[in-house]
Length: 331
Ligand SMILES: C[S@@+](CC[C@H](N)C(=O)[O-])C[C@H]1O[C@@H](n2cnc3c(N)ncnc32)[C@H](O)[C@@H]1O
Image (cartoon, rainbow, N blue to C red; front, side, top):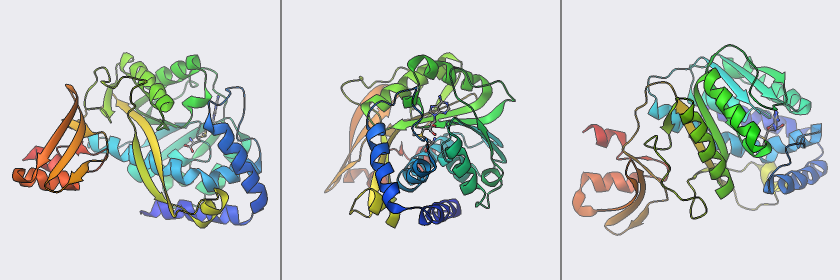
């Protein structure tokens, strides 16, 4: 875990330590209930100081971990991309602000648009504890999206994590299309549910229609080979739960797996892998089965021990990785 992770988790702990744990637990239950389904776009879910501390303690570590993982996958597909300016929309308490700086240390300035005043207050408080330039100096603007993002200078990177679910389909389209105009690269994340995937795949279509290319996770700009309703493209990131996270979620496990769907699209040059691993590889004695998204659709490939180097690479491969691994492709 890098420096930004520990700085963020220390900042969250210090804020949560000063709050009443019973009130936080009540708020967590209410937030979990609201986020379980589709959020009413008229509702401001993060309404009070207790709500935002509760979200920071039980949810932000997971949205941060998912965003960092998605951004790192996108960064690997754009090795020449070194963004300095960043716009994060629906930033909450800044999960994607911290995650983007972890994936792209070149970032120097970040602007966050967010509708909730308590979220902005806490997001700033957490960010000021970071030693990273872009995180610490992040600018927070209170703004309620009802369509396109406001006009402003073009940015290198725009991100929106776990927000589409709180917007109407029409606003989702207007925001996404406007981000494609404002930014050189756009990364969108949603929960790794069938509905989250469907919002991402719709948004992916809007980004391509605006002239962008997909950098990740897809190895192509064509139609997604997955049939909505039958399956959904998503990934998972495992994170250790802090003590407060365990207590607030009444969980006993020391870790959780955050499932997420995402798309990164860009007008920058991309180096897409030939294919991407769509499931946990099945590793049996002498065989590894990989489910792959390729330029020709979904393919199930079995790699056997007889394939030597390729087999050893397959043993090390994880869900979400490029296939073949980049070193392997270069050989
Ligand atoms: C589930 S939280 C995600 C926060 C953060 N991006 C993260 O990944 O942890 C959704 C955020 O979007 C914000 N949001 C929802 N609808 C919005 C709107 N119409 N305009 C601005 N912000 C909005 C909410 O206030 C909240 O902070």
